[in-house]
Amino acid sequence: MIRRHPMLISVASAMLSGAMLSGCVASTALSVVTAPVRVAGKTVDVLTTSQSEADENRGRAMRKQDKRLAKLERQYDRQLESCRRGQSAACSDAQDTYAEMAQMRARR
Image (cartoon, rainbow, N blue to C red):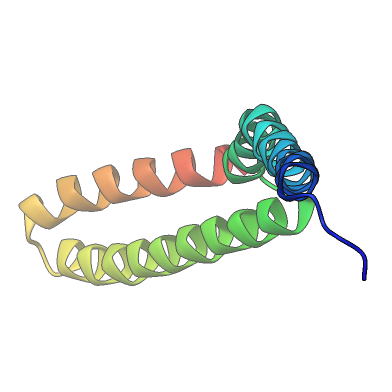
């Protein structure tokens, strides 16, 4: 019968667990080292706008501006009609509205 040496078994066991532990520590160290790079990459993704997002935002802004311009045109028509009926305050308001419409058209 083969006699096992308890000291040899404990040394081998310690070496194996040390090897596993060092692998675990190395893995953790690698995670800690690469974490800032991953966080920075995600931050850049969040802070930058892709071309499709920029196009969507531009389209949204254009639709909003068109909606505002249409509202001003309806308001101008009502003010102009009131001006023709003799309301002098409506004439002044129509001039202001027309000036705002002209500014919006110039920004396009």
